[in-house]
Image (cartoon, rainbow, N blue to C red):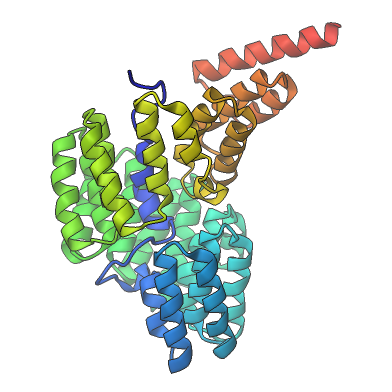
Length: 409
């Protein structure tokens, strides 16, 4: 008998947005300038001793040994405090540990000390957007003057476009990104421009842009992930499996392709094959929290909820913040095993990173009602009171009736 949790995680796990904005989780060979990742930062370090230490920290980071990696990278920072690559790698590790505030300060310190703007901005601007500092970004990094050229101008236009997109100011985002693409037409920019087009319901343009991104940079992981998302949108698990396997041969360390295979097998109710993919993920990344999540989900589907909770409760809060679409399944399991406070904590972590997720907000408000806290439930739903979602309006009615009843006594 299958459990009651959703069959799979939300497809948002593999959304283009995640590919374009989230911390890079694995090496993507042949990345463009705009796609600077942890794979590239250490190679920019000029000091030989600091560069060697940086690579050691990067290896620990890829093994999910984040605290060890932070200890190691601090030695590199001490050896070369003004090296932008070292500071950027340090910030990447801090983000993995959930300390985005310190990561932002680290990047600003690097910029103050004269680190290459391109290295700093490629990390700082996406971080500001993840921290919902879009308005601050737009003020701090104004639109470059007409005729401005070079990577610096392209970086700022790219960052501004993503901030405007995050604020749902789509025409402005498209305009700024189109200008950025005239300066540097690379896969990273094309992918985000495709994302904007999708939101504007211009799916034909989005498909063309993703195809161009793949054609221009066949070794670009964000472009390949964007293509994967399009294929998943067709709802054909067989095509998803074929493409993801093809991409794993090109990007063996990019786990999103492995996650796509797990998702596809789960949708096909082939749990044994999904389990084999989870095992392959664990072999590649022994301490993977995604592996923990899917192992827990598979146990739920096997109606072994107590064992599933033992697995899921070991997942740290920062993982939920980085992957908020997974919070609903985790919270539901927590509630069903008698851990309602932990369920609420998962949902709160998710909303701290993605306050726009209506389903997560609705689930948290429902939990608050189970906890006999109608006022907290009302506060949770405050940002979406105008929603046309009938579930939201029905719950709001229940909450208001309960508050009125309490006041009557």
